[in-house]
Length: 288
Image (cartoon, rainbow, N blue to C red; front, side):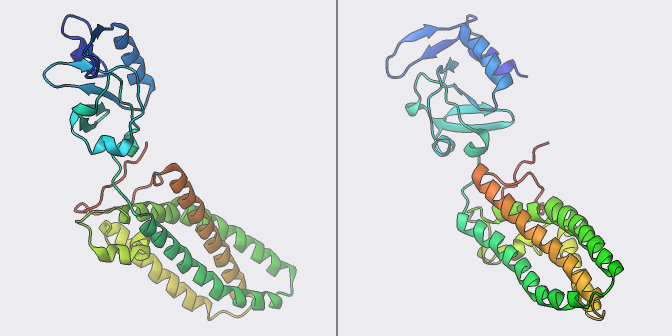
């Protein structure tokens, strides 16, 4: 399969025929076949083939904008499992090399991405702000060494289970991934998805049945635990709330880091956004 893109251009006469629209000159280049083999194996970029009436190979890579590549017609850009088009009239005697992810990325709104992510961060920060005064007051009731030990164990437990396992490895990348999803500018997506972007990012709606049920189930359990913890006397209530604060802060920081990284790399985290089968959005490709 890797040899097919090369065989087609060089099938006629065993040579690669290159045409230049500007000079009208024709040149033969067998070395291009070797370079193509090296490019198809080692390079993640796209190699462009012009295919109007005759098989043509354009040599030497120019700099062509990724967004303009996706919007033009006439030249087939063949990558692994992907095809795009550009206008033949704008082709030169060069190889059009573009980034696959950027060439096929739909247009997205940075404002909606920020609203969805910052909204979730604000939601978690509100929980931290409500619990901190309770913890500071309750920790003053600790009067024995074993209670301090219990506090240390509780902090470690919540940092790992809630912070690392729950937020960093699950909730946070899902929030950032779904923020990219809901920010897609498509006429098929309802406006209220963007208005309620923070709830969309959490997974309260427009997800698989398992995702939506899990999101609402976890929220319900959290509220039940909060009600139960309120019945405890200090310092035990403060000890548990201190662990909750550690987990929430871990989650907030992980969301900020993942979102900043996604903006820098111009791509969402490699995490399944758990979209339903019938969705107007373009699901990102998850790397293996």
